[in-house]
Length: 462
Image (cartoon, rainbow, N blue to C red; front, side):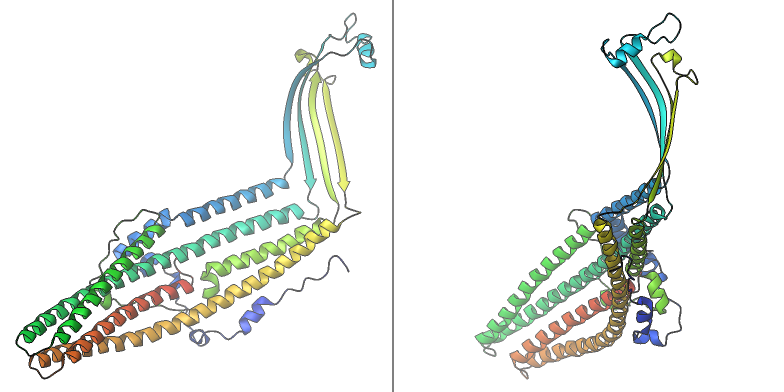
């Protein structure tokens, strides 16, 4: 089997373009894209603005990723230095005593540097020299390795951008969830107050023999159930606040917000733009694209390992047994110059395995890129549909709540005039409570969908 077999890379972009795009993309000619907006402009709530700012400064996971970027940047410097000459300076001093009756000792004793002078005994040795070595990058192996490291550095930056998008979205989603819980809690409290007032009326009617003990117990049980629900919601509020505090990298503390007008909030209009903007804005797609480019360079680096490498070494310096004679030229001068070429001949299995592994990693990167693109389109399609359906659902929920609120008033008046059974009042109040809770939950999902589609379009990081 030939070593340099063709690496069959799927035609990713062609396959991607041939896929059926989300409906809003197929006919859209509008180049406006909400992801181009800064998150500060997209989320207008002042409290949410402060929370996101704090999270971007203090979030531990984001800070860990920032250090990974520094590591990738240092790797670029390392690779850059590998194809530049290495220059070292060496200074040395020593003393040597050799035996008189040895070959070197006899030669030293019979050698005069100047007439009437012998070598000193013991013999000092002083040296000052510079050495250089350089691997000639004939096959661009070192430069491609540096480009691959640079590409991965850029990929790590995109990874950070993707994390920022996730972080902004998670803080915003948790913030809207917290506001929804506040409204649900307030709704439960109002409902408990209404039921307690009805309970008082039923107790008075019981004293007047117009109601039974069963009616009293039924309403007392309903009040107790809603009081228990109140504590469940309070616990959810505490956990949601602490989740936000965790994202902000701080210990538990109250989260400032204004939940009074939550049900009246209008989601920010979102524009999907065109497909090319999705590819440009989504950090995870750009990260996968850069990883694909780096894996292609890795294949070229691995292929170059089969070729011979040329290294040039040189040295220049001074050496003498007396510091005063150290710079005496040419007597104290030393130098060397050499070149060597090395090429693997036998047992190239390790190099071959590395090359084949680089090819496999490149194919992995191709499929990872394709998966990122496909996932991005599906996320946008889901959220576009979600936003539209939730808007219609919320209008219907609001109408249902209005109708049931009117029914509660009617049922209460009918009960007071003995024209309705206590169960009708109880069931009507229960339906009204559930409908209002569902309406608040739908509003929360509506705001969350606005955040998610902004995230799916690749916003939040810029």
